[in-house]
Figure 1 (cartoon, rainbow, N blue to C red):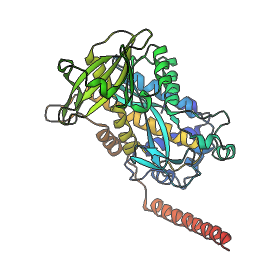
Figure 2: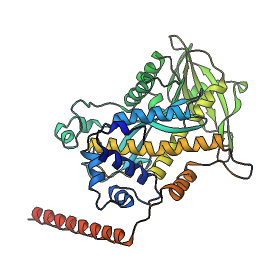
Figure 3: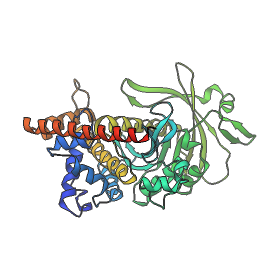
Figure 4: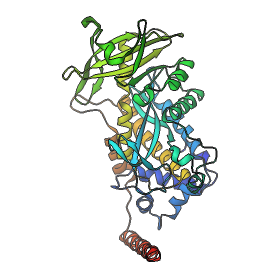
Length: 412
């Protein structure tokens, strides 16, 4: 919190931000402005709602501080930037960016809000360092709708790969030292993103679909058709890294891509040793690297899923109940900050106090539990709890009356 303190001109929003982050780090079963305010000992949620909507502070500046903090704490020569999107299911149509669209959270098309995140991943740990809200074309073509949601006039429609390129460029311009980018098929199939990474001589291992067209000296061919031409000796058994159940071994093969231009381009193929299922990755490196290096980068992509899981489960990343552009960015940035604390504290403890043979290493979940129990566990009087019970019931009664009045006004 000391790192981001200069971003707040007044002491009140700075203290509110601290209360907010401590609430996100708590073990509350549900995290919104009501529960966070009660946890902090406030009489009403007005202060925290003001922090998210009207207080004067720059969420992008806090994001920059967050990025610098994560890189400083987790810095490693094998760092990888991982891009991925995640969706939050939402009701209605007024929340910024919401429409019916595919989200991996549900595995189908749902009414949802989607954002693209950039994670900094190293062998020591991983955390999100940037975020961009995906604003669908149906929104950017409706100026009145954008204005109602507080979207700045300068915001134009951008694809998810374009948002990813924007965040990667910001990280590199800020001096983040990495050699690789990883991502799924949404990003691997986009030639503009690949070209932007190659222009910066930044290596990548990006997933592509089985029907992705590969250029060879004999012409273009589908990725799955190219695999059938590989000899048996082309496959090697390699691990993508240690998982919860031990090392994750797959068979891997590499085929050259004959695209013009400097650097080295390959199709990396992964085969499940049990089911034979194939996965494909398009790779680039400015200098030639061994197959084992590409495999490690490909395996690192899954850390962004762990970042989403712990960010949502431990720091309330997806529990925001805000509708407008500014409020979304502020909530998500502070949630990323809360998760970054857990990720870096976990890495620090693992490094300075390694677990004995009869213990597993400390996890983000255990760090949160210990931090809440030993450091920040609040104790509030029964009067405080009862006052909040009255406040909730009074607010809900007003909401019910307003709903009935609107319903009656629309009936013939």
